[in-house]
Image (cartoon, rainbow, N blue to C red; front, top):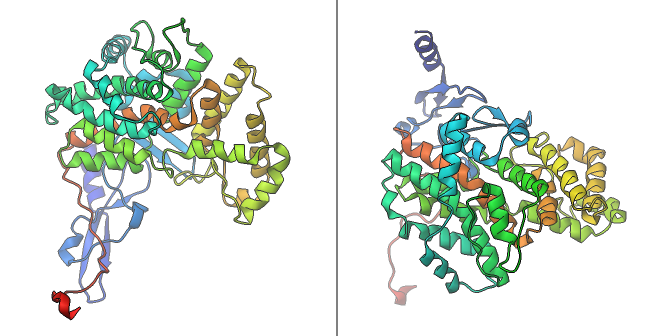
Amino acid sequence: MENERSEVLQSKRVATLTLDDGRSIEFPILSGTLGPDVIDIRTLSKLGVFTYDPAFFATSSCTSNITFIDGDAGLLYYRGYPIEQLAEKSDFLEVCYLLLNGELPTAEQKAGFNNSITHHTMVHDQLARFFNGFRRDAHPMAVMVGVVGALSAFYHDSLDINNPQHREISAQRLLAKVPTIAAMTHKYSVGEPFIYPKNKFGFVENFMYMMFATPAEDYVPNPVLVRALERILILHADHEQNASTSTVRLAGSSGANPFACIASGIAALWGPAHGGANEAALKMLEEIGDTSRVPEYVQGVKDKKYKLMGFGHRVYKNMDPRAAVMRQTCYEVLKELNLENDKLFALAMELEKTALNDPYFIERKLYPNVDFYSGIVLRAIGIPINMFTVIFAVARTIGWVSQWNEMIADAEHKIGRPRQLYRGAVRRDYLPMIKR
């Protein structure tokens, strides 16, 4: 009864829009459990007008229960759990279960989920032949888009998106097989034979085994490096309605199969403004070259001569909550590999120190983000730079799948169809070529 009263009270909160011709309309003001209120403008078309919001800076495209971000406070929650707690206490598959199902699993649920993912990691043998159609020097993300999209040609026994059981099977297949495809993509690019998964390994161990093992010798995953990569996957598992997630939702709104939808997300992630940030930050450090050049580079940033990569964020106007976890992980990995005097890490620390004590960056709230540190960690682990965005895709697959599944299950979901502000030519009649 109390909840019903609360909903009634909420429904009475309105915002009124009055046009210059005197017409007006009221819009309900809706509140979430966290975050700012939103104005429901779905009835705006009755006035024959639309809103204009390029890049969706002030538009909520959906209702979601999965991830919450407060950019001003520097908060990131998965299903209500702070990212720092999950990165410290959880493992990646437990986080995957949480994102998919809304709750942390019991021991029995976790064992069953792990077992199911483990036994889905193999891919159809014919899928391996797809790789021969790509050049060896193709960008790994180009290969990922093609091969992941092709999964729908092999696993068409569970493509009824209106069947919850089919959606669950497809979700688990994607979560299990994308890392296998990612490792195969790497092996193909360096001319080494594919390494097939082993069920004795955990999720992250298996991925590292497929990435780095060779038939010539045994490979034993280093637990410190496994834990570091696990944190990277956890920190990147979901991030609300970003460009790639919105792409997955938009593709999914048409009824497209889940494999095609995830391939569309990989394509969107490939963009340097989205998934390539850690690669760009690492390249920036390599360009600076030495700690002695940090003051010069920082001044160049102020003078608009250089770009400062790995600092600031579209959403976070405070510290990126993932950055502190990644910074600590940097120290752990470099210590384990005896790289504590690593030139790039020392350079990163000097740049961080300089920027955090400079009024120019403080006033603009340009704090280090997760990408500033993750590139250093991936490089130390042995991941090639051209595979950085692929690792991001491996991590984000669970977020994409969870968001897609949530949308399909939403009774209110419809095919996405943004409007536009047209500024082209007005009506004109066709002229024969002789009169042009």
